[in-house]
Image (cartoon, rainbow, N blue to C red; front, side, top):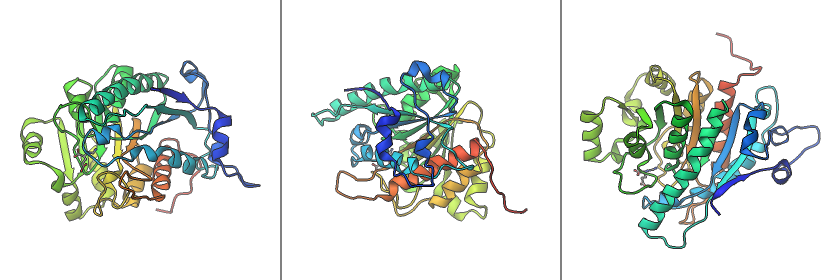
Length: 333
Ligand SMILES: N=CN[C@@H](CCC(=O)O)C(=O)O
């Protein structure tokens, strides 16, 4: 059934491995019984899963992105609750339950992605209207469209988005899939500035290169190859890249930008996980959302990696810690 499945504390409790004398994040996260009660929760961050791989398969990619959400959630819920991150800042909303078409033709899959877009955007709109920050764990990068759309409606403004990604996801508007969310977001007037950090030259078609170089002042790219040649750190380059990104803004993180993370288009070359952690932990931009996508615990071709779950959980915790600082010991200057 295509719907938002809202979680209750009782349903989530079995995911937590309790230990005497310890408190896990899962024991502290907040729940609501209906979206209408969003306002009543004091939590600033709203966690939402979109466990689907329809968008990836509609882009002729290797499926499996539906396998990231539950293990990632489990890894997050089993982190320690402490003064760095207590868990009370997080409202665990639930996941978008998507029925999988039995017909795998591109037409059917692409139409289904449009249905998913229609489910995603009103949920994101409500979360942001409630002055909260959605943290969305995918799923394919197709869901960026629904997220940007909902954010744009909630804030009554076009969004400005920075995407950490090896790919531009600016493929043609040939029907919805994971490779063209930003094309549709631009075409539909939801997206003003689009910046790609770490785009890899080997995955940019000649036509896309022309489009990015000549036609669009609102699209900026910092290639991964340029970062490799730079004398500045990844973090310093990031800070310079996003400094003038206008508000309102959102943050996209495609896990195929990080070397060796299991994903449909994963690569042995890319950022270290610590590069991205450093970016997130030092972030002081008021992003209206975070979308982490394209990761998989198991791909349709049989490849598996249990580390994907912890990777996602760590990144979520870093993002929250930066925007919601608690007691944290700083090194001496
Ligand atoms: N979201 C990812 N999109 C990439 C996938 C590339 C691939 O499957 O190899 C893209 O369309 O370019």
